[in-house]
Image 1 (cartoon, rainbow, N blue to C red):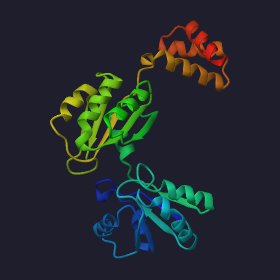
Image 2: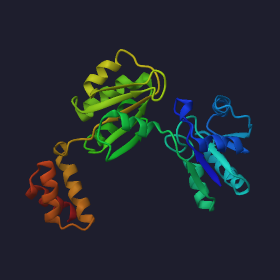
Image 3: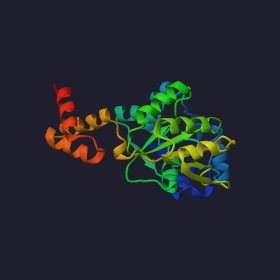
Image 4: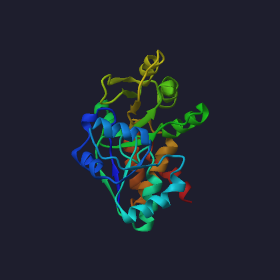
Length: 272
């Protein structure tokens, strides 16, 4: 089978007993960076030296079939540099290939920068979405943020220190300067820091320079901030789920403040 194993995101003390046992018994490990895995083995005091195979963004597509066949004969342990493989890390292509080939995939859960940042940010956790790394090109990033401006779920992003200030500026422009957010830096490490504030406040703070591995958590849009076209889309989604058009329009109107009559007529026009 294929075993996806979560590794510490900073503090080696977060390594689970199951991870340690898996590393002690592994014969083959597919690793995002074999050097990082070697340091992990040394840091955990593991004497076992399994066969290490590189599995990263640049070779996963070509190597997936080979690794799936290998997993038919022996357990294949899959590691990313930190956190859970496949979550903004290599592994998705391998898992998809394994599922298609009927090879069992299981996981050893553990540390996750996404969930850790969400937990400490102090923002709603009942509904959230992980958006990974924002686009690098400013124009593409701003357009992507504009598409997310009406999202009511809490959003989690990863970002590099060099782009943090500009990304926070773009988020403030798209979501509003007063949208609550948190920047979570160096989670579980010695210099862990969680900076909370509005997007504008955080952008001003980040302009002075920030170091380390970073997650950004942004509060969702208030229901009454939802633009009229997005509200119409919500009405149509409720209708597709079985609600009557009039009832759907009334429900969305009560949440967004838009006119029930106008929502009804706009949705009716879309439906034709």
